[in-house]
Every structure is written in C-alpha cells, then in structure tokens.
Amino acid sequence: MEIRDQKELKAAIAALEHAATIKKQIMTDQFHITYENLQPVNILKDQLRRLIGSTELQNDATSAAMGLGAGMLSKKFYEGSSPNIFKQFLGSALEFGVAKMVANNSDKIKEVAAGFLDKLFKTKEKAPPAK
Image (cartoon, rainbow, N blue to C red):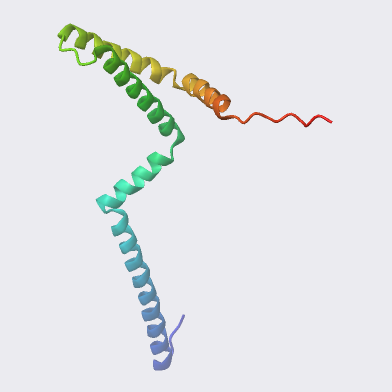
C-alpha cells in the first residue's frame, strides 16, 4: 500500500494502532488463561480430573481397594486382639496373601457379587391369575 498524502498516512496509522490494540488484548487474554492453567492448584485439579475419568485407573483402584479391604478383614478375623507376636506375623502374611488374591481376581469376584445381589433383590414375577 502506497501512502500519498497526510490523510492516508493518518488512516494507515489508525489501522495499525487498532490492529496493535486487538493483538495486545488477545495476548493479555492468553496470558491470563496461561497463568491460571499454570497455578499449582489448577494443575492438580486438571490431573485429578484426568485420573478420575480414566476407566482403567478406576478399575485398578477398585481392585486394589477390594484387595486391601479383604486383606485387612482377614487379618483382623485371624488375629483378633491376640498379643502373640507369631500370630500377628501370620496375620500380616495372611493379609498380604488375601489382598493379592482378591486384587488379582477382582473381576470374577465382582461378577459373582453382582449375580448374588441380583438374585437377592430381584422381584419375583407374579404368575397370571387363574381363570
């Protein structure tokens, strides 16, 4: 674009200033977005959302929780309130063994439990009334 007089020069300057203002606003907005995303709290929130949304992680966490719970219960049932150190050692070994077994077979355990609950809470179909 060739500028021939002062009027065209002022118009070109005004257009460039307007473009610079728009670019500055875009950069400022992007800076604020980036600043918010780089806050440690927001990074943790984002990562937690990703983790919670992961079905693989949910299944792994469920399996681990089932294993830990079953292990702790088995240890508590075996040991009771015994002060015997040998019994406590065997209780800990039992806890880890049961936890590993339950965690490794959690899918099968879930299927069996779901089937049991379905049978337990399933309403019986009523037979049609006799005529």
